[in-house]
Image 1 (cartoon, rainbow over the protein chains, first blue to last red):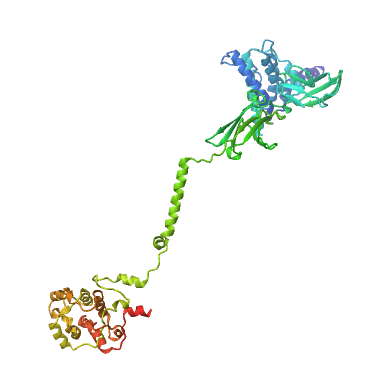
Image 2 (spheres, each protein chain N blue to C red):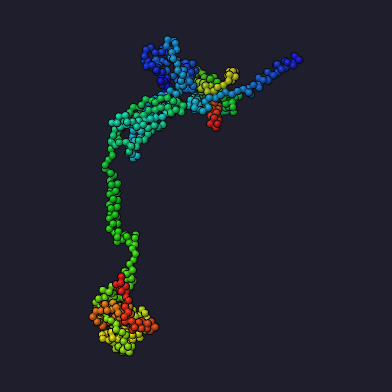
Length: 158
Length: 409
């Protein structure tokens, strides 16, 4: 009898832990009408793109950045949340003030519009170190832009 | 009221009486910082920074001596006051007869508050407080010349407000006023236009006069043709054999001719002898008339019915017994015409063709003439006999002539 209880104690909880992400709740997106994105976030993203292109020549092959995460259906909020938090890592001292401000605006503005559960907060903290090159930043920004467009298209259809 | 462009200005609501807050702080909706402190400038507190997030609400706290006096929650994007437009100009376009108003705004170069609604106000300088307002989203406006007073001085100004898609707020200050004068309307017309207008006026007047003058004679018969008069139509239908032939249904034209009663038809023998002896003076009309009812070659033989009494006295009758050629010769000898005038000579011939009895000639009997209105029943025998018999038997019959028809009317 005792050995049977051990199986249940040490076997099932890990199973539950593994299965939990499937049932995890999504982030709520507040700016679905697109006003904040079109009048504030998109402007900053475009300015950052311009500044990155002026400073570096990125290769055509896409660097591996944020590969694990994608703007899947019903997972857009989570993706944006993680992407916005990752943007903060690109804020550096040697960047210009405008560059840093735009980065902060996109990051903080996106987070302001998302209402995510604490579980997501805890999980994102554990993200590992990522590449911090400007080209990867540019790709990340494009992914954020694409995901926002997807969200807005979906909200228009509804 | 808070004004924001790239800076944030905090104006206290109590007109700044007494000691104002020593510190005013804004929390929230800031980038990379938790709060910012206002700077004091005379009666105003202001912040000039780029660290506005522009998303979400902020809180402003007014502190006095470290204590929090009041606070206000607001969204910065809802209290935007744009910068005033500038460089307003008015250009008169003669070809289009309008005024083109253009102005400039610094917000066309800005990143966030780009879309504005503008208000243009203009008035005549002498009319106080009589401003006309026009709203537009672009920086160009057209004013029509006909809607403005000519030769007048106008002033114009413009202001802006966020167009409320995302950014909202207050009207900006008015731009500096621009003055312009509308051109006066010249009395002198274009000479070409003047010439054309005069020519067209005169041509129209001429056409009206011609229409009035020629209405009855020319225009009305075509537009409203009158029904033909049967008497006139008949006169026109009658063909004149000679110029001298007077064709008319009016008996008064035969007054010159002597009309004799026909007493009767002489015996045939007497007529024959008479015809052989004398030659008649026959007109073409008589010949024609005779020929109308009969065949030409048979004409001489039918002369036997001519009243020899009428022709015996004067007229040569050589042709009556002879051939047609002789008759033609006689016809041509118009010198032996009777007393009837030339024009009236034809009358009795025609008359004779129509006479059926002697009765009606009593009213118009002139002096006897050799050319009596004898009855020339020179129709073929088959046709003539009924006429002869009627002549012989009905002396009392009234003459039925076309003139009688005319008179009866």
